[in-house]
Image (cartoon, rainbow, N blue to C red; front, side):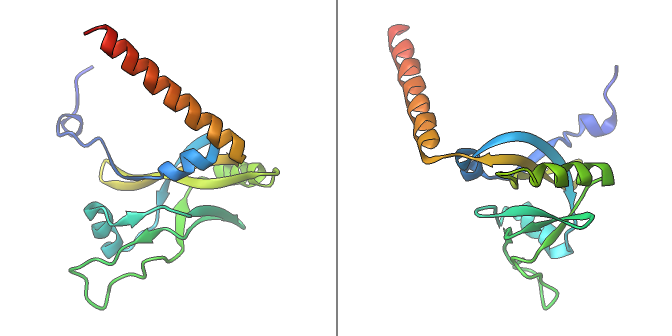
Length: 161
């Protein structure tokens, strides 16, 4: 099948920020892509990469999902129309998805964590993860496994020289 003009122009997925801390602190059970409601200066700040997902989370309130504690820095070119950096932002999901997320987060230990924010075909998207918190010993085991894997790769690289 032939590519369309949009596919040829390279309008793919442009990742703005990833929440690496969440991948360390949680086991990601499921992922879901959502839209996000933003103001104009927030979009410009996102494009400039002025965003921080540390300690952020999402909550299902009634029939809506909201993203809390995401810091999107103030836009330098903005005037008094500039946005509040840590305001609560609404996520855009279908009603069926919201009900499914509400049911899963009411299970013990599951929470909604933003994993990344990116632009897809010009629209800002948030990748949410349904996550279960890791215990301290699980974090240490994962770190030890990564370290062992690195050492194996180094040994193979040196052997092939």
